[in-house]
Length: 285
Image (tube, rainbow, N blue to C red):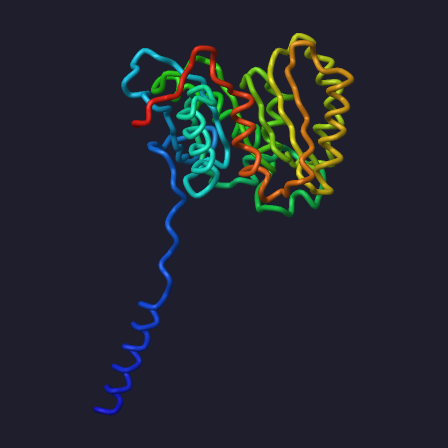
C-alpha cells in the first residue's frame, strides 16, 4: 500500500511539474483604449459582440462628431487591435482624420461574409454559407442605429476588410451602395460563386450613373484573386460612374496572409487624410 501511495505521489509531482513548466499563453495583442458591448440581433438570431475605439479627446470634446469606420473580423482576437492601433497612431501623429472604429466580432464568419452560390465547392468551406444578406440587415437595421444613438458620428461611414470580408464589402457596394460612403476591400475573394459579382459588375455600374461613393480594391500575390480584381478594374475604367472615386491597386509584393497588416497603415492615412487646419492630437486618452 505504501509503495502504491508513493508511486501515486511521485506521479502527481511529475504532472504538476509538467504543468508548471508549460509556457504561459502569449499576451493578447495590444489595443488602444476601447470598450465592448453586446447587441442582441433579431436579424441573425444571436447576440453579437462589438468593440469600439473612439479617437483621442472624444470624452472631452462633447460636441464634436466623427466619421465611423466599420470593420468585419473586428473581434479583439481578430483584426480590431491592429486596425485600432493604426488609426490611433495616425490620429495622434496628425496624419489622419479622427474617427470612430466599430469592430464586429465573428460568430460564423463564412456564413456572414458570403452570398448565395451555385458552386458546390464553395459550399464545402463551412457548414453554413450564403448569409451575407442577413449580416448586412443586421448592420443596417440594428448595429448602425445603435451606433447613431450612442456615439457622436457625422453620418459619414466607411467599411474595411480583407479576403471574405472584402468579398462582403464588394457585394455590399454593388447591392446596397448607399449603406457606406467609402468601401475598402483588400484581396476580396471575388472567386466566390464563379466570379458572379465581377460578371454582373458592368450592368450594375451602368444602372447607377449618379453613384457618388469611394471604392478601393487591392490584390496580393494569389492566383484565384488577382484575375478577378483586374477584371473588375477594367470594368471600372470602362464604365465607372462619374461621381465614383475608385482605385485598384495590385500588390504582388504581398501575400494573402499579410496584406491587411502591411497595407492598412498607408491605406487608412490615404483615404482619411487630416482636414485642413488639423494638428496633432493630444497624447492623453
